[in-house]
Length: 87
View 1 (cartoon, rainbow, N blue to C red):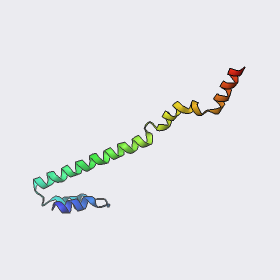
View 2: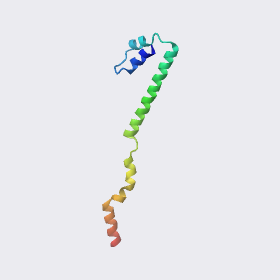
View 3: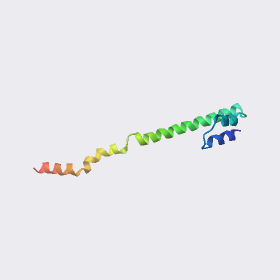
View 4: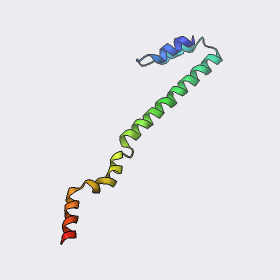
């Protein structure tokens, strides 16, 4: 019975209320609790993945850290500084 419900949730197709009801109708309370726990863990995992993807896409980027070193490689500033020092 728990295997039937697990197969139902591993399906890539949308699950109807009727299919869900028939998958769990013969389950014991302990099996339903186990299924609920697995579903909650999966939800938490999905939320963590979503948060990580949002952080990667919209979070602070490493490009900001690179701007700290831009002055070291900016040839225009270097040439201007040299010209100022020699004048």
